[in-house]
Length: 109
Image (cartoon, rainbow, N blue to C red; front, side, top):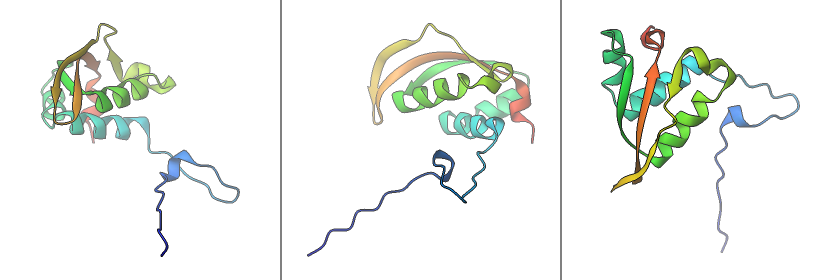
């Protein structure tokens, strides 16, 4: 009996000779994450809101911090360093209380 293991690797995270990948632009990745965090964020940006606050799972917080720390992100998003860790437990684990400021251009198509 053989057991097969499948490893899924995101194409943007590897570099192989003769295999060129293109990472999605920061703006698209950030928009996708914001939509995942709360689908109401993009419409709120379109209506002029720029500051957001709430509880998100640790995995989304890590993704938000990672994107916000990229060199090109300074003009698009700022995460408040005063994070409330472990404000609750949900279906996705520990919840972090975060505040962030987003440039409205993220909402444009």
